[in-house]
Image (cartoon, rainbow, N blue to C red; front, side, top):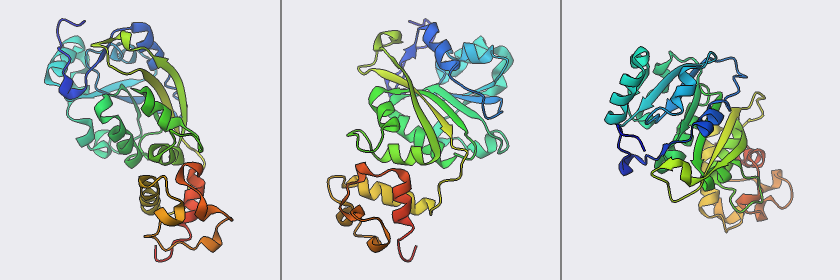
Length: 260
């Protein structure tokens, strides 16, 4: 329990209190991309920040929506006051943040906005080569799930189109204050270096979301709104359900759509 910052349900705050886990999360950043800036989302009381601030590999910045946390962090890290941003991460202009330079993203992400954080990462993927984050266990499993898995869905396809995903370890609810009602997991996303994504991105997102919004239907039925030339695709595609296709397969579908 922290005597200075009160965890607020409205912000989805569950403060990590285990320093060993915090160190493990911080050490999960690979630095393979050669970048040296890291943005921490929702540092709260700074247990993860401690390891990033003291790292020789990273220049630490943070974004925090909670005024009480911001005040606490500025007192805790007086040399980093200018690098503690009081703002909602979802509203932050990431292009302006580092003058369009790349950075890593890390955090014990608030579970109530974790999917939105991932969509913002996708929108800014050219700036973010790596993400290490704590998520609700089910969300983490969904992001990393492979085709054919019952948890495989929209997030799986969209994230895996641009990032290699890895579920690193699970975290018990007892190491948080207050303890959440769910288990957690830490995952790492590393942006793909090969340019294997070769279709209209906007249409790709739309096709994937449309297919999974009716995931029990075959693709021929769920994607009726698009003019898809099924003859140009491998046999049986039209009878598949979305959970059986990887992102490359969705790209193939997108590339046959007429009047793109």
